[in-house]
Length: 366
Ligand SMILES: [Zn+2]
Ligand SMILES: [Zn+2]
Image 1 (cartoon, rainbow, N blue to C red):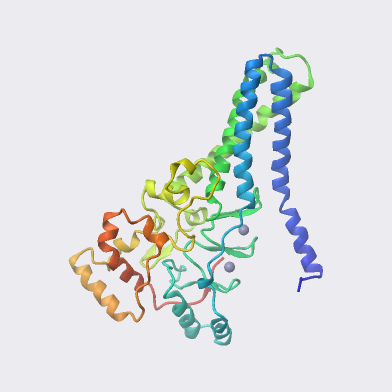
Image 2 (cartoon, rainbow, N blue to C red):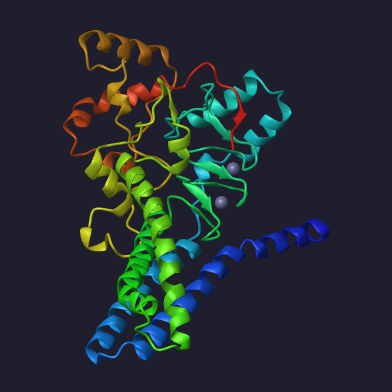
């Protein structure tokens, strides 16, 4: 049954309002097209060779920019897989039980076979009350989309979409190509902009467009370059914007570098293995978005990396009633060529067992 009434009308109105920033960007791009192609290239430029070269280069940058922008806006964010959702009986159980030990048992039972490494600040299993699911690592509930988003980076009003696992590569390319687009305009427009100030240009309508085109492109270049630079840094460190603000919590505690596998692997996790696709807005990110490789299990003090650690690891597996969690394809992929991982692979799975921490409480983090 479709919801009706004032609240649904309000929701629909709000959804329309969310498109205003996208509309704003689209209008600016349309105007920049008119100003650059018609006023700058066709009307103002005198040299035919320069005109053609400028038009070809402009359309090339525009195509890449619009393509990546389109993909960022219209790629649906990915939500957690079915296995993370509570079953009907578990939901009933959770609702029936008072908040406490029995609720923790339900979640602990659910999480034991799931590839979850991260916890809430208090060490509890990350659970979304709203979506009724155990949150996969790096997944967060977006209050605007009202859904749990895999590897959520942030909700971006300029694309009216959540930036996350499914479109993070597109978002990076969108930043890169919009920056290139603006820089190209600044570079082509500069000499005509100077001519405008030195009265070298005839007093036409083109003057107005050339001047504003330069100011707008320069202004956007500055803000885009800082944002792009920041996201390049995040990719190198394998952090999402949310994780940069609040470091993920693992069994042994908070670790801002918890998902970092080194520069090259971090880059490949977002852009994929095949370099020929890196610069194209097509989906090539590695993994399934639900689980992410982490080297932390190898550095865990309870792991068998030291002779004393070996004993602790054995002890932890004996005390733990849960079977070893399988290492997923997406997790193992990036780690397969890592020597240390291969050596400790068996132990790292055991290490995950100990994460079923006794201090579990239901905590809804948004
Ligand atoms: Zn949720
Ligand atoms: Zn969102």
